Length: 156
Image (tube, rainbow, N blue to C red; front, side, top):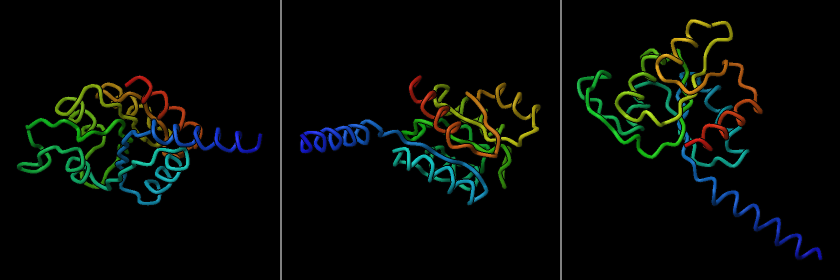
C-alpha cells in the first residue's frame, strides 16, 4: 500500500511539473521584489521565470526589436511568454506606457499584471485603460499573486 501511495504522489508531482510549463516575465527595477516574486512562483511550481530590471531588458526578452531606442515600431511574437508581471515605475520607462506598447505591438492576448503603489488609483485606472489584465499593489501577497497568476494562465 505504501508503495502505491508513493508512486501516486510521484506521478502527481511529475504531472504538475510537466503541465506547468508556463513562461513568466517579471519586470521590476527592484531586485528584492523581483526575487520575492520569483521565489513565490517557483515554490508554486512555475519554474520558467525570467527577470528584467528595466523596460529595455524586458523588450529584449520579449524579442521586441529595440531599433532607435525604446520607441521601436516593429512587432514581435512575445518570445513565448505566457504572463508578464510589470511594475508601473521602472528606472528607464513608464510601466503603463510599456504595457500599452506590449499590448499594441506584441500581443493583445499576453496577460499583464501591473504592480502599483498601494494608493495609486489613477495609475491603476490608466493601466487598465492601457490593456492590463489586472493589477496588484507592490506589497506582494503570496496567495494573491498565485490566484491571479493561475486565473490569467487558465484564460490563455
